[in-house]
Length: 565
Image (cartoon, helix red, strand yellow):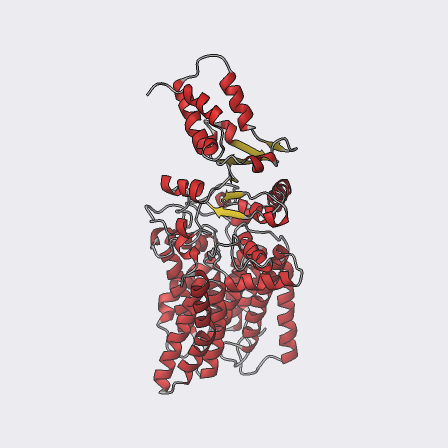
């Protein structure tokens, strides 16, 4: 494209260029598709809805453990037509990324004010942004949210009439339905619309901005409260979003900008650009970017590297594109554009973020944690577990209840168990999510069953969990007979149920201890047992076995071995 000029780019040429950019983006996003573990939480909600249980994680429990309602609805719609949910999520994400690039390319063809084409800096830079394309196929709503954010920014940049603000507000409502933080965009649209109405002394702008919120977002909030009993999703409480964590949030933003150094100058200029003369559109873009980055700093960022910063990236590139168009001389414009786009391609990758199981202050590059081979292996174990247990009770399976964390969301989705408790953050459980936050730590993972003895006991007694789908070393290190392995995946038995264990014991690839047989051998073995050992075995079996199984004979024989007093 040429530098900004008085003419409009030829329509057919512009459409061809935009479609080409979108096609390249689609192919680039699909270069190395992957799936993030958190996405499987959304998949299970969509699957339960399709099965007739409602928008729930566990049948009979109305807890909004997802933060992307529109995304779940879209996935359910795809599933209703017979699509595989993980595959559908990847396709929707890749299409969203391609649409974002195409939208930015079309904006460049028209120019910031629709007065002529400019160099497509934003479209090319977004196309070459590693993490924007990387998150396109992760299964989460990230790319769709970035698309909605970009649409809001482009519609709001020069909005003046009620119709303009109506379009911006529609984009913002889509963003708010995709993620709770999208409500920030809806608020900014309303703020600018109110200012426009006051200047114009007409209600058109404010009315146009208010219509989507009143007609779409407010009914959604009323439905959420009626269905789940809360105005905010359970994830808000589980992630401690109301508790500021600015030190961690600032580190998160710095970590991102340190990798994409070309964005540092634009980010540093945001306070200045917010004060730019009214009417250029730069001040609106700058305020959107600054407000969102402020939100990211306030909540402490995310445990996934880059993800929370991505929605603001196209806005930063739009500002760069606008500033490039104002440079004097064609050579200066081309050179600066090349630096911005080339600098994006030449991003700085930190090796310590790409080590499986390793984080930097609780932050990890999620794609590096889930290479395709590892994901497939986990999902395979999940399918095996479902086969062993027979699937949900409705299909003849045993009534198993499990707790999971981290990578086990994939396992739970594939196993199709009736009840699963997200154990580390409390995403799917109201009680755990509303625990009092004692101290800050790994952002988003500061609540769960291991934060207190009461929380652990809640999982074991109130929720009556059979298995932890991960190794709990506090138990298994001292009591290895409580460790269970399925095709190499370590689990912990925390409630012995004869019906459940009968489906697992002796199966190929399953390593588990037959607890009654082990206890018989323990009781029959000659020699004096150390008092500390007996006490430990007694305490463990009281919690795991005797509490649930009527076995008075073995209980009394073991109790007789306890030291006096």
